Length: 114
Image (cartoon, rainbow, N blue to C red):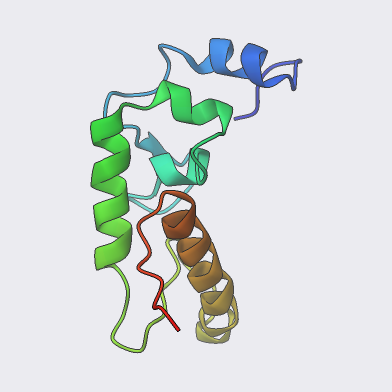
């Protein structure tokens, strides 16, 4: 659900303040049962306006969950239902890049030295 009429970050965060559940999980209207927009979906980078609306404990919990969701082959699966198996396979790369970018932005990625 976008901010009503103002795209400005301050106005947007004002709109959402008090509307987000304490755990930061927003149920997806019309989504699969148990499907949520997760806190890191709102604030995949620390400097985003939505990050100010989410507590540190919420973000830390979600970063732990994201890191733990990495599969044995190094990738991440989709966080939403795919309508076909081929779609899930195609989008898996994008999910992996997004997870790595988020973990890196929050300084949760160990970068090997050369």
